[in-house]
Amino acid sequence: MRSILIKNAQLRDRKTPVDILIEQGKFSKIEPQLTATADEFIDAAGALVTPTFIDPHLHIDKAYTALSGRLSRRETLEESIEIMQEIKRNYTVDDVRQRAVRAIKDSVKYGVTKIRGDVDIDTIGGLTALEGCLQAREETRDIADVELVAFPQEGIFRDPGTEELMWQAMEMGADVVGGMPAAEWIMAEARRHVDLVFAIARKFDADIDMHIDQTKDPCAQSLEYSAWLSIKNGYQGRVTGGHCTSLAYQTDAHAHKVIELLKYANFNICINPQVLAIMGVDAEPRTRGLTRVRELVAAGVNVATAQDTICDGFHIFGTGDPLDYGMLMAYQAQYNSTEKVKIVYDMITENAARLMRIENYGISVGNPADFNIIYAPNEAEAFRTRPKRLVFKNGKLIARGEKRTELL
Ligand SMILES: [Zn+2]
Picture 1 (cartoon, rainbow, N blue to C red):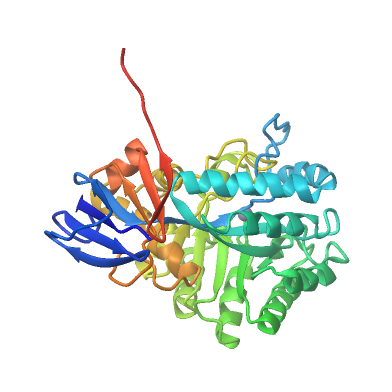
Picture 2: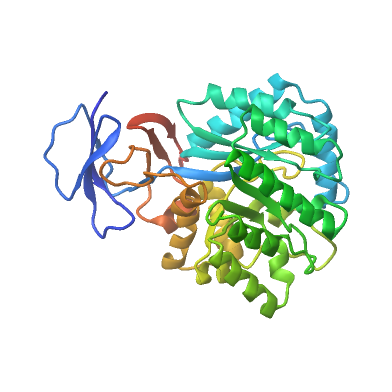
C-alpha cells in the first residue's frame, strides 16, 4: 500500500500548518516538519485538511426521482408525501439501486465517505427500496460506509401491514430503526409508534433515527417522549431526532425543559436546512421549519446537519455537498462570524460522527486515513467558495472535485 506525505496541511485545531505521513492506510505521523520519505508527496500549501464529511440523513432511495420535473400545486409536506407515493408505486429494485448508487457516488465526490441512508418501508413499495439500497451499499462498499435506516414514511399504524415490514426490514439487513410518529392520526398512536420503534431496536440491538415532530404544532410531543424512552431503555447516545420543528413553536418554558431532557438523554438532533427551508408546512407567514438550533448547541446537545433529499418528490434541488447545505444552515441559524461558522463545520464532521457512533474518526495517529484536502484556508472560506477538494479513504485518493471558473 502506497505511503503519502502531505506537507503544509492546515488542521482545524492548529494555528500553523503541519505535515502528515500516511502509511498502511492510517495516519502514522503528524508533526510540524516531517522529513520522512514516502511513495507520494502532496503540498497542501496551507489548505484545510479535515476528516471526510459524514451525511447522517440522506434518502438514497428517493434521490433523482424528480430529474424530469417536480409538479407541485400546494408546496406542503403533505403534498410532497403524496407525490412520492405515486413515484414509489413504480419502484423496481434495479431502478432504486441505480439511483442510490448515484446518490452515494455523488456524495463521495464532495468528500462524504459515511452516509446514513433512509429507506422507505411501507405497503406501497414494500421492501423493494430496501432491496435496491442493500445492493447499492454493496456496490459502493470500497468508497463509502453506508448505514441503512428502515423508515416508515407513511406511519406504522396508519399504514396497516407496515409493522410486519419493519421487522422484516431489520431481518433483511437494515441497520437502524427509523420512525415517523407525526404520520399517525392521533397522539396516542404516535406514542405507540415510538414504543414499537424502541421495541424493534432493542430486539436487534440497533440504534434509532426518527423523523420527529416536523410540524408547527406546538402540542407535538414525540421528541420529549423519545428522549424519555432513551433514558428508560438505556439508549442514551443511540437515538437521533430529525427536524424536530415543533420545538421552535413551543413556549420557551416548555422548550427549555425539553432541551434539558435532550441533553440528559444524550440525544442527537439532525437538522436538514435545505428541505425545511423550501417545503412549506402551512400558510403565511412562511417560516423555515428550523428548530431551536442555537439553544440546542448552547445547551450542549449534539446537533448535526444533513442533505436529507436530492431532487425528489420533496425537494427539487440538493447536490449532496455538505458545504452547500452547511452554508444554508449558517444562514438559517444566523451564524455569521469566523468562530460561529466552525460550529457548522462540526455539524458535518465530528457531530455527525458522534451521532452515528463512528469510532476512530478524525485526524489522529493510528486512525484510518479518511480525510479531505479542502482548498480553502479556513471553515468560513470553505463554505463561501465550496472549493475543489481531494477525497481520501483508508489512505487512498478516491475522488477529486474540481471547481473551475475562468475569466477569458
Ligand atoms: Zn428525511
